[in-house]
Image 1 (tube, rainbow, N blue to C red):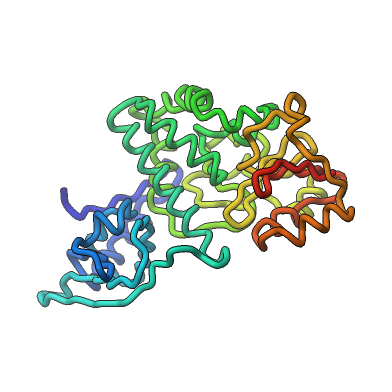
Image 2: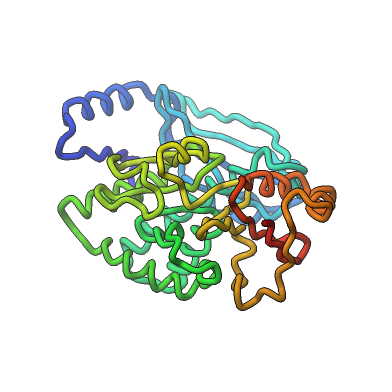
Length: 336
């Protein structure tokens, strides 16, 4: 496996422009054979035990103007040494940095990192399904990550479908079957459909940015995601294009069915916004498990006083004429 780099050129794009850009990039190497390692104080092993699921998995070569964003997971908190090594010209080089892997974050400042990691993991899952065929466990993991983080792909567009019931959102197995039907499009080996599928997958695997408001989504040309009107005339590859915010949507008639608030995802069902962690309930059949609270009532402000800042950020998204279903301290609340 070499250090090759690919560029996807659409039929209506200028191939000479793409080739020139690629040439300018590879003609100015900064560091080659790059590797990244972590060593947490007090542990006997390096990357693999303390840090895992790094994306991209390997850094390879860096060229002038490149920006590489690496995301991963760690299970051992503490002070860590981060080592970047490689070659500058013919000479070996190594750079050491210190980093604190926090046991628990005190706020949502870096909450976007988890979602960025999830996007890349979903891209890797789609890649594995593309290469190796259907896999029930991987498809269920894709659906679970997409539901938790509001990732709207051509295979999970049902998340933005307001006709999908609240409880169905938490039915990972059932939704995995729905996603599996859409994933069959990966079997296309050629033509525009195949091109678009792989362009979307490549965007997710390599994306380096995140959004703080509306759901993350990728669209295959001429197949807009239900509930998100603003993407109808856009092309892939797209990376986290933002759906309209509430004020813009009100005037344009288009409104996203998904919101991202910190690390919480909200789904719109009719006039009700439902927090992802509250989707395990049927709003009609389980009415006895839901406590109804009038917005701006004394009880409402009591909840506000007991909430964390991130929980209050979710409640602050509610607008006039909307309802909100949230899970707070183990109890379901319907704010009307």
